[in-house]
Amino acid sequence: MRAQLLDGPRPTGLLEVVRHLTLLQIDPTAAIAPNADLVAWSRLGSSYSPAELATALEDRALLELQAMIRPSEDLALYRADMAEWSRRGELLAGWRPSQRDWVQANDACRLDILDRLGSSGPLTSRELPDTCKVPWRSSGWTNNRNVTQLLDFMVLRGEVAIAGRRGRDRLWDLATRVYPGDPVVPFEAARRIRDERRLRALGIARARGPECRVEPMDVGDAGEPAVVEGVDGEWRVDPALVGQPFSGRAALLSPFDRLVHDRRRTLELFEFDYYLEMYKPAAKRRWGYFALPVLYGDRLVGKLDATVDRKAGVLQVNAVHQDVAFDGATTAAVEHEIKDLAAWLELDLALTS
Image (cartoon, rainbow, N blue to C red):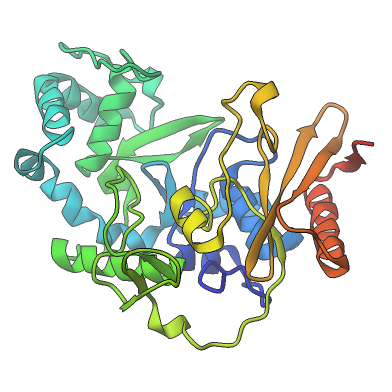
């Protein structure tokens, strides 16, 4: 909890939060609020305004990279990866070689995009030419979305970057115009620093875990080895956090919050069973469409089933599911957070009878 800035003393500003957590995840789902804003609110409270995030992105104190908002100075830790993307694709199995091959097959389109951005950027993806000879094939929503898929790979190559937004559309430009000119950190050193910072943000994590395409859940050899009683295998901990005094508080968390994002880790460490049920039929949901995990002190104690009705101007609380029976202090603290959430959203609070 302390590593995730969810203990009693709150951080003082948005940049402090993002620099410590290393990222805010962007997700299009905004059943309560956009994930990046909800995570920031859970740390900063109602003093936080989404306008702060918009300003930080506009001023480029923060940058978008692969659906994550990161401190602009951290780009130096990813530039070596970008420079090595094509070569490393030849050395690794799985999905990378096929991605590299698809980009190479559409090299003419890649060059067309760079030329258009160089002369007229920043532009939305709809304003960029689709001259791909080989269409992008997938079983999901990206099928035949050639330009957007190619742009994502060009981000990995360090050629283009998100320069801002026009409404909900991303604005693309040449990376040289967007990214800071900080010296590039060599590949191995950057990987080690990222592992150390990830562990500092998580507090405890596995040394090795399943591969994740954007943000890993494991931390390599960072920190010190540790064993969690009752859980198989070795963990890694940030020794700077061990033995420090702790004072907890209540918090309502986004389903994409890093404290609960790794569902297996959440179950192993906190014995907290949680899944995002928005894709389930309503009749099969246990906790609600977009239930918010409820934290109290050092335990995850329940889920808040709430929905936003902007037209009616209300935050509708359907249920507070208690994984463990709430005592009076827990009930009061959770109710206070719910009221604070409604106030922050500038909505009236409505309770299902």
